Image (cartoon, rainbow, N blue to C red; front, side):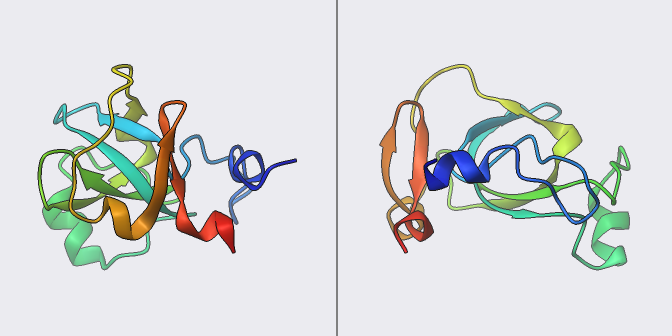
Length: 117
């Protein structure tokens, strides 16, 4: 089994299966931006103050959260799984950190550098 396939559907510490994986191109359901996931936290890992200030819809803290490079920007976001959906465009993401975090774009997804280790 490839390392990529091992990452997909991986159970988190809470016993849930993460639905999104590093290298997947996504769309934010509320803000409609596209991006690529580069890291997954099994549960919310930032400060409560950040959560209170930044999450108007109060997504669950005990579900996976994702670090996302935002398309056509130098911004990164931290997003609850509940706010993400797969991107259907099939288009790559334009972000200055892509080359640092990924080795390529194949079959509609990015290949994270750590898969080569």
